[in-house]
Image (tube, rainbow over all chains, first blue to last red; front, side, top):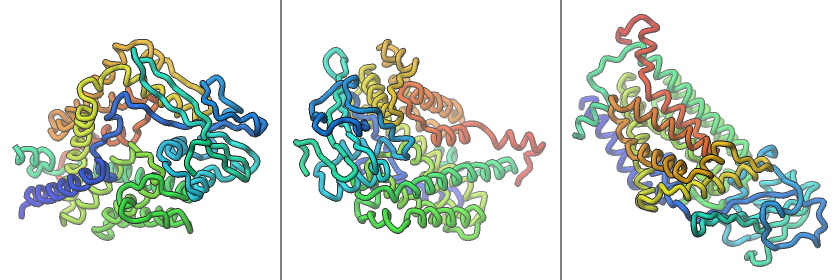
Length: 157
Length: 287
């Protein structure tokens, strides 16, 4: 078999494997992908922001949604601590049931940062309204003290 | 038509020069080095993970939580390194294919929390292409040509399918500037989360102030992605790849999402570096 025929055969075989994998795995079977990210424009999104509320009184932590200027505590930048912000956002946006394992997994991600701190994770949602106005809402979601985790009252444990 | 595409991708009739051979070794060093950088970076992060939030790839069929303990991710990074060395020094034909398999395991372990890493796809694709090339062909020249052909094929296909996904999911109004504003706001929250500081750069502010500019940027991005398959043709490759690099730079400026691996592979494959090397060496003699 000539080089070109052999190349054609292997490319076709690889393409078939690619087609089967991406079509049965929501467009993505790493490293093969149809790159569907950013395909759904204008959909609401969910992200997360962490605040250090160690100095706030426990009773002062309210579950009421807030604007960015009204957030409790001080900023807690995740990058310098080696935590990827996408991972925190995924815990918040993709977790349906907060099983003890899931809660422990979140705590493990923050590991030593919780030794002497109380952290509050805000669930941040964005929505596109009329006239292309965008509303961004910060909702207190999870409080992590050095030894306990408190979920938003409406979150299923 | 298919025969023509195959000729453009795999170039069976072109004589291989020393410049091409040297270029390919440089390409290998960059892309395999990048794969190992990902492997070790993820290997150190994976022990912080304790649950599978969103199973990806092989993790949809196998519980990969075993990778979180006993430093298995570090062991896997070591296996990736060994496989890469076997491939690079041609100690065994399966070296790069093993690298691709260990790389996949590392990826699904690292991103079991759910995020899709944009940049690592092209590096993973390179590992797969190198793996197939050295298993399928005995002659070095054929392996090199096949590997580059496969990478260019899937790279072009990927950009075009990305554009088609957008058109199917959102229609032509995907380019509405309001959508760009949504993504900028989303990324602003991410940067706030990363750094603790709200940082909207001056270009983002300009895009937020100018709806036509936001729409024009998305239109440029969509059209550029749509013509991605044109990189299969050596004639169009430098132009389309340059547009794709410009698109990635635009995404970085407007949304603060960086695509260094994509830009590197586009930069390496867009321009006739082998000819430049031949000119520097003063010869285009067969290697």
